[in-house]
Length: 314
Image (cartoon, rainbow, N blue to C red):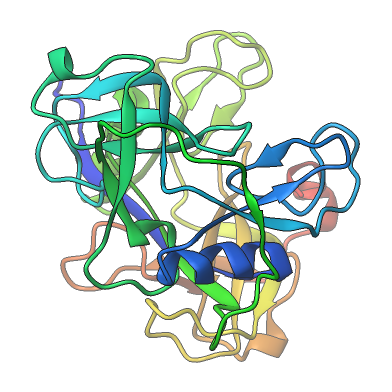
């Protein structure tokens, strides 16, 4: 059996969001080494604060200041920290109920080993040396021998230069393996061929192949070469330039039913003005030098396909 492909893959994007009055006060407070919570109508203090009561959905606006000390309610040891985590050496993830709060805050505890961590231990905030109004302004928690602080104190939530928005980078690192069927598909593309698989039950040919028929649910193994030409079944005009694509807008992305395939794949249409692309247009792949997949599809010059020949693939 040929080797199945695998490769590292990173999905990453910055998530930008604005902050309401409660979250703005909470994050600005961290910048000023102040931990704020919010009180509910039944007297509970929630830390981190939320804008609506999770039980009653009542709007919450009454802010209070709680202590930077607290008690570990539960924990888990992290022996191998990953990139971007609070500490570069092994640490404990802990839920800490700060003094004056009724809920727990998730963060890291700097401890020499799991034997030094226990439920019920006292901890305190270790503030970051440079703070900007983010949860990372709490560098981590550290063991603390002091007693519990008093009741929370009312706070108006006002600070100079409040934080009104944050950018949270979202990133997922993993190893992707396309599996047996798509490995064969990718390797065929490197030879400027397009290969699908035929379902032994319904006899449909699926491109790209998935290793199983999405209709019948049975495994597919019979490989079938399709194309290279095909028919545009439907399309869209792209008017917003992508940051990682050197393609001038507007351009067209289309679903293309390759000859012999029973499933349309998508590709960019080139070699024709965007406003002349149409359903039924006959196209063929254009390969860039050294490319492992078609750069785009261009018109073949054939007459348009009859609608009945591709209507089931729209």
